[in-house]
Amino acid sequence: MQEMGGAGGLLKISETTKAKLAGNIRRALAEVDVWSNCLVGNVSSFQALDANVKLDSDAFKLVTNIISEDPLYIFFSDWIAREIFERDLDKSQSKVPVKLELLPGVPSSEHLAEEMIRDFCQLPFSYKIFLSLPAPLSGLIHPEQTETDYGGGIKILWWSDKLEKSYPGVIKTTKEPKDQGSAKFLSGKETDDKERLMVLELCVGGFLDRKNNRSISVDLALEKVKSFFGLCVATGLCGWGSPAPRASYFAASYRVDNDLIIPNNTWPIPVGEDFARTLSLLTVPTSDPDALRRSHERIRKAHGSSRSERIMLASKWLFDSVGGFDQLFAFLQCTICLEILLGEQKYADNLSVGDILSNRCAYMVGNNDEDRDHILKDFREIYAVRSEIVHRGKSRLSQQNKIQLQKLRNYCGRVIRKEIDFLALPNG
Figure (cartoon, one colour):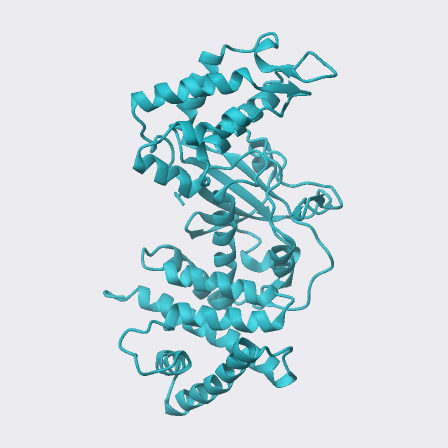
């Protein structure tokens, strides 16, 4: 995904393609029905856009990477649905759907098609996504600091009246999250004016549709947040404990192309119960300034390197393992984390995956021969459990296995920290 500052105008399509697209959009707009400022029914012509108009390969690759395999349908149907709502085009108060083109004051289909294509060519858009954080994470930054920038488009900051004026609605006061199908739309916890609230700000590029349920960019953004908190766990900035009392969280987005804040009118971003539960587990185990500084520096280093893709992916798997209800799957998630970092088969054709990981881990993070021997012994036991889960269908973890799971998470953190340290080396 594009970082902040690089969005807008990267999509190039030929004038011939634009003309063909405009004709198809005009025909689609002629079939649009509107009722109570909502697009209803008759979207078949929008659904046909991707079949009728072929984008150049570079443009198609860009939009499918940030939207989906049906980018024209999703973008243009979402665009007109958003405009109908935001421009309050339906003032007829009709009790039945009305054709869009019959509503008074609606721009011509030619004008709308031109606007739609012009906006389409500005992809990828820039966004700021805000996620309110639970109270146990308030130690992430010092109370006297305004914010901490971790790189990679991620900041942790104290929410303020000034930010509320620029980005209204980020902090909600509803008691219960709205349930929309199987996805939980996370709304903010109730708070009073005196309580300071901590917020994660994520700057991303891509495309967010109005309801946040059809865009790849949403999934990629949430994966990035998971990787960040996985790094927090791996570097010791965050620990975990018992789940906090049921709390709800709210993720809001604003489009901010060229530093212009564009009210996005999106639904709350669906974060999911597993994510919210894991977030509620996290704590900040130390207030020692030096320890916090070392963790912050490691996280910035991971975000600041072009060679850190594996670290970010492994950190996401570590984050997921922390909050999972299923301890068997959490065990496998940790082994996947290590396999991402250590499991390359090159130069190790005669060794099993367990042997590769145990040897590489022992010599990467072991402090001395005794420590390395201890790691090798732990890995033999850990991979025996992994094999039992995968090959024989182990039904639950024993108490000893649960201890091994904690060791496994500790090894994941040690390897991630070491990999981050390697990034600073000339050939790291």
